[in-house]
Length: 212
Image (cartoon, rainbow, N blue to C red; front, side, top):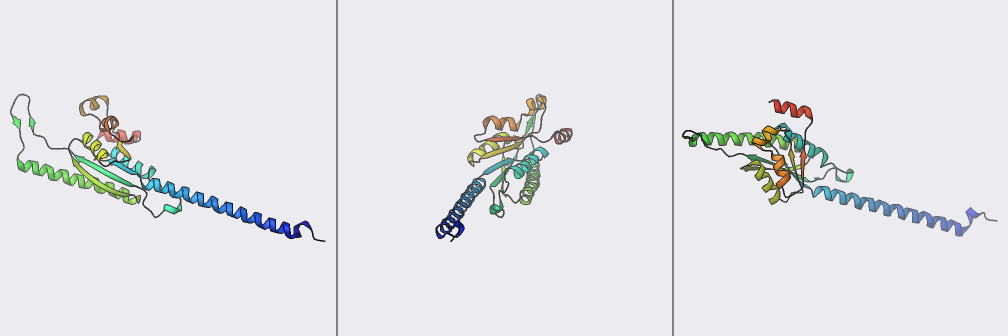
């Protein structure tokens, strides 16, 4: 007499049950794979703009973006690009000055050309440093140099390039300096047409920068 485990019908049912379990596991794996692909695609589509200048606070914002916004999720995207960052630097125009009680002070063409070359060299140094950071994090990057008022040009560039997120660093200006010089981060927070993230560096970085 056959035992229950040896009954052909039960053996067939057990085999069928194993097949269903394997099929369910395979479907779960396919769902997880589709979810991972969707997450990876969402990351790859992210276009972030970071404004940099000679300040350490702006480079802290770039470093923060590279470490927190472009993380790879799983082994499936380890060798793929995970989004792109546009590093923008704005060169301020050279102005002639007019004294309140006297003649204007106008620069010669030679002086203006010297200032322009110095600005270009400074921009090259700044953007080279930014690109090295992006390369170290294996994040695709492009650079953009603009001329004009930094506050306005950054907002215009972000709007024209349809970026998903704009990052600017915070220098931690005092109320007096902010009143006289204005704040790029404050202006962008009010006038940028895209989401904006203001990255504030640690206090020790702010104190070192404000003392220089």
